[in-house]
Length: 338
Image (tube, rainbow, N blue to C red; front, side, top):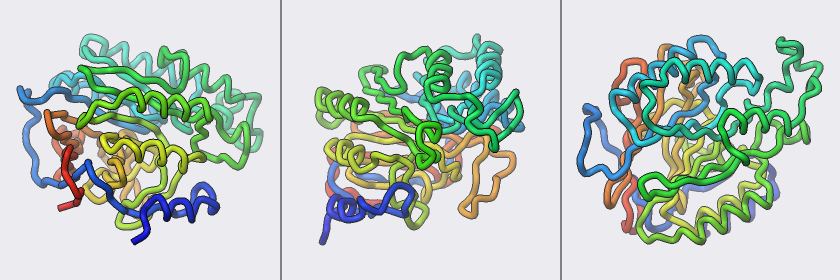
């Protein structure tokens, strides 16, 4: 049987955004599903817990309420960290001010670090002119450098990629460095420079702790099998990114961008490593791309000695999302979905 690597290589010339990938699974990460809900309690066996949300689109209608509900639930559950996987707003100054204001309003409740990755909408200031939506005058005197600088200033970072350690677990943040302002053909895809991919390769090479997960975050997804079919890819250099990550079966890659609701069929794909969809806190959609009203989904990640449990959570209730739970277990061959 041909391998996933063989399949990806033969499709490499088809271009970004084509329906690509194949759900071939290799050893190390076993993923299983579990139905039902339960209270989020302080489990003494948990070595680390963190929240992953994406596409908060803070300026969109009701997005502030969704973000506030998330922060209030976090205050009650006390995670060790939170990661927001891109699309904070539209990259315009007033979106960052609005988000900063909301964070300030909840500052007494936020007793954990928040990490941000850059998304395609962080470059959407190029569609605004004098505060009004004006795509016909794109790029409206905007540049990639300006958009990136606004994001980095807000996130208190010096690059769109970087890493950190939380309770001795490795967190790696990736991000696009160019947008359609640099090349119209890029559209909303991520552009990962050779420097960024070299850094990722070297960083993973140095971190080779056996049987320990590594958490990687990138807003745009690479091609993978999900939704009962093929998930489109939105990373220009997805072939090399996949080749790098495939060498490390302990990697769990979180993406946003798709907005697809969190359920077992849409939230995870088994490749050489695990890929998990984090939906959209502001605007989740179903398989027919219809807006799901009164919903603000995200993920809760609980790390144990020999497994990682990832659960979908609805922050407007708040409650677990039934049927949206997976377990990524180390040292299990061959991996399978049951």
